Length: 298
Image 1 (cartoon, helix red, strand yellow):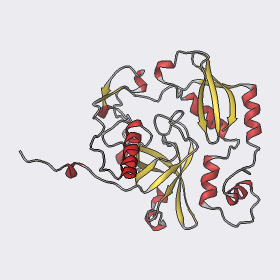
Image 2: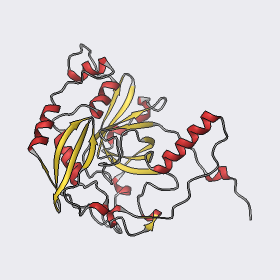
Image 3: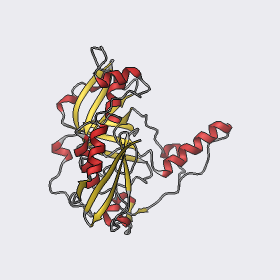
Image 4: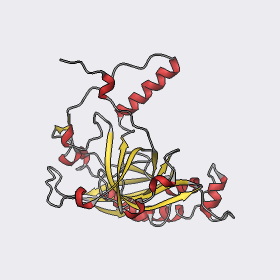
């Protein structure tokens, strides 16, 4: 039997951009794309930010994104080991994360095991995710390309590996069988306490005067005498600045119930979802009903 070189079993793909979004933590992120119409941006890196590379993409309403699960513990451990190797000038660690053939999908309550290739689990051999998102706009700021998208199930800082147009005649099958996930999960009822309402209203009126980038702060506040927006200002507004429309999105995200499956019967236990620069605290006040109790600036 012919031996296969380990290098033949791997493929190195360049990171072409990064996802910039209001959600910086896994908790609260939609478990599938297009469950919440959350607006975010893909910031392309040099040399992939060339406008010529996107000629014709504006004719497509949706795109496929190939991306990396950079916040699961396997990738974090790998990155930590690599950093230690560099600091100590040691050879790269030979130990690799063990292959996990089975996972526990949250959709099945987190108890039943399925094969990893029968799931969309983040703990995959490749560490790659695949999502279809809506392409809202292609913007060119300061000569760089930004893709404005909605419906992503990725958090802020997610590395983007590839982008392809979504073609409905070949990519969509209305009669496809969907296994243990035949339809979207039911959304829970979400209410907002009077205190949380007041806190939210107060925060949307705060100008970003404490921004490290004064130019960004001035642009976002609308006081800068600059003819065009900058990449930094665009990203800042999506990642940090709370606006009126965020209330609907916050409620929609919590309605997806980001809590661990094994804790969904618990009442009056507090959970916190970070959205932009605020922490949203919520509890289940009765089965199927969640209440937002506070909105506090980080």
